[in-house]
Image 1 (cartoon, rainbow, N blue to C red):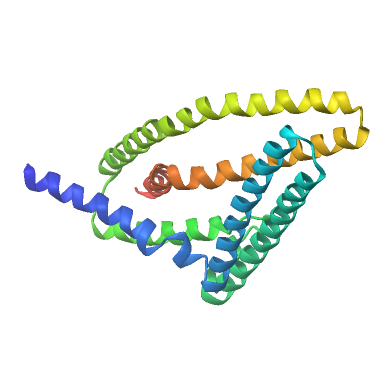
Image 2 (image 1 turned 120 degrees about the horizontal axis):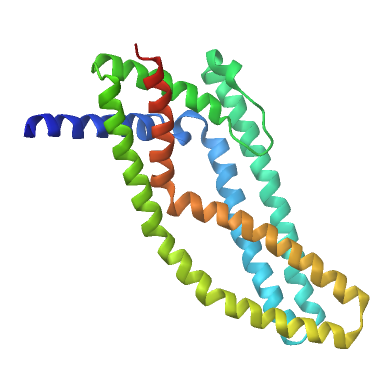
Length: 241
C-alpha cells in the first residue's frame, strides 16, 4: 500500500515537473531576446507605478507644477512597457516559428499575448506519451485531478491573506489623498488641473490593473500551474478509451 502511494506521489511529481520545468513557458515560448524584453516591460510597469504614486502624494500636498514631471514619467514608463511587451511577444513568435515549425498552426496572434495555445499543444503531446507509457487509466487521472485541484485552492486561500492586509491598509491612505486633492482642485477652479487629475486617475487605474496582473502571476503562480495542469489532464483523460 505504501509503495503504491509512493509510486503515485512520484508520478504526480514527474507529471508536474514535465509540464512546468521541462516544458516551462520560458523554455518553450521564449528565447533570450524575448525574455529580456519581458523583464524590461515588467520593470517599466513598476517604475510607472512608483512615479504615479509620487505624483499623487505631491499633487495632494501643494499642486506645484514639478509634480507633473512624475505624471509624465509614469506615462513614459507605461509606453516603454507596452513597446517592450510587443517586442517580447514578437520575438517569441519568431522563436516558435524557427524552433517548433510543426506547431505554427496553433498560433493565434493575439495582441500582447504569448502563444499559449502552442505551449498547451506541446504539453498535451508530451504528457499523453508519458501517461500512455505509465499506463494510467481514467480513474487514476481523476485522483490526480482532484489532488491538484485541492493544492490549487489551498494556495489561493493562503496567498489571498497578504493581499487582503495590503488592501485594508492602503485604501484609507488612498482615500485620504484623493479627499485632499479634490477640494484643492475645486478651490483653484482651473479646468486644466481637473483634466490633469482625471488623466492621472485613469492612468493610475491602468497601472494598478497591470501591477495586479504582475503580482498575481507571482503570488498565485503555483496555483495557476495546478489549474493549467488539471485542464491538460482532463483533455488527455477524454482521449483515453
